[in-house]
Amino acid sequence: MGSDIRTGEMPAIPEDTIDLGERLDPTRTLLRRAAGGDQRAAAALVDVLGPRIHGLSVHVTGSSARAEKLAVTVLRSCLREAGDLAASGLPGEAAVLDRARRAAVATNPSGDVRSLVAPDLVNDRTRDRREVEVLRVLLELPPAHRALVESAAQGRFSYTGQPRQQNAVILSQALDQLVPFGGPPDVETRALAALDALALAEEGERLRLRELTRYPETAGIHRHAIEAAARLALLTTVPPSRDLRLAVLEGFGAVRTDGARSSPLSARHAGAAEPEPSYRGDYATPVLGTDSQRRMVGPPAMAGGRHSSAVEPQDGSSMAASSEAALPTGAPEGASSPAFSFRATDEKQRSRRDRRREKRRAAQGRRGVPWFSRTVAAAAVAALLVLGYLLSDVHHQLEESERLASAWANHTMTAGAQLVPGVSDNGTWRAVITEDGISLRAEGVVGWEDEVLELWGETDGVQRSLGVLDLADDGSIRFTTEESDERLFVTREMPPGNESGTPSERVVASLDPAVSGV
Image 1 (cartoon, one colour):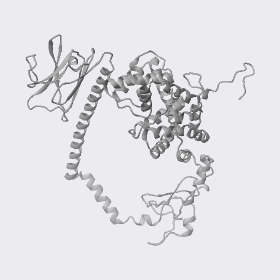
Image 2 (cartoon, one colour; image 1 turned 45 degrees about the vertical axis):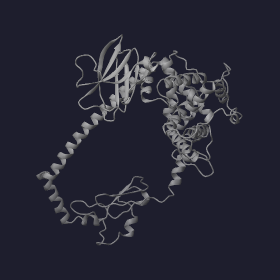
Image 3 (cartoon, helix red, strand yellow; image 1 turned 120 degrees about the vertical axis):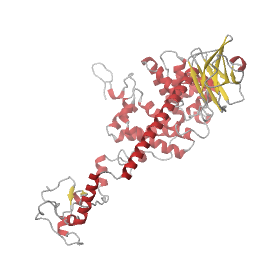
């Protein structure tokens, strides 16, 4: 491709540039060409991204066999949806590796976490300029932060509460050095974007991130975090033990033994040499066959007589060879449509006994459904109603659980939030106290007969009731409110609660930030 004589500049190639900038994106070009059926582009995608997807899967799963199967599955899905990946707002490489990372982390990571900056690997990480940049960023981090980033890059991040928030901020700072996030300096948005880019975000965190990235200036933070996570996959590259092209391109196009890829047309001709499947049928279900499987034994029977061309064989005799090789009357030579064929004996098999049986069944259907059938139908309707009620109840419980989980996540990410452990001999209690509300969790709580648990709040010595707690069958409690207090405690009250407005002396749990040292 030559330069423009008038300007001396290289002409722009629309398919090699992404919509969000004028950066060259060869992977996106390969995705577009693969979506159009270009086998060479599909093979190039496997050769370029196969080792990175395989290596990322090896580091996450700890098994080369599982990693190879996972790489084949991901690459096949990328080829099937190459057009959608090329049209997304992400660069082509980041879009493919983001799908690979999410598929790998979803397998529950196992095995040991490997160092990405080991001395014996540094000499092999100088072929790509981007690998050198990623190594430089990791080596400049403190050892504890570097170990955290390496662990998260391999799908391990088992933190909860306040440590999870702090470590998420550290991950966002490291990814920001690889690919600048830009946008407003919102710590919560950047931390949640880093967790989601590494496929480590929980359901409540993803919902919160979706709410924060509704605007273009914050959506760019999430997109750049995914690009930075794709850069980390440079250091986990491990070539597979065998060529993945044969397994990946099996459904995309035929691959010959000499390594050359044949076109779909040649693959279709190659498959024609295989034995064709057998077809069979009866008078009610005609035989469907290809041109080479047409069998002519006479046209179907018609009311008022038979066609003169029909050959009537004797009962139990086989079809005549001459009639089997003949084409149906009126069928053009070389017709590519399937042929319908019948045998003359098929009509004779419909005896008077069969016709009488069919008449009895039709008359029985007109008289009405038997009482047993009506009973079964009524039972089926009742079962459907019960099932619908159960499904509605389960759906309601699921929505309530998602609402409570989202409220807990939002409160923990609020500035100035206090995570308060409870003091109790009946279960494990935890609460998050913020200026915008309170979220409470409890596990292993044993209830009392004819009594309820009531949550109380206290501010400046003034006590007030925050509501009666619902104790689940498994001993768990989930509660959230938009009100806020300085300290919390739970008491046993007579149902539906202490109407006097003062708590009883039977305290079950105390959640006081001053006592817990928060």
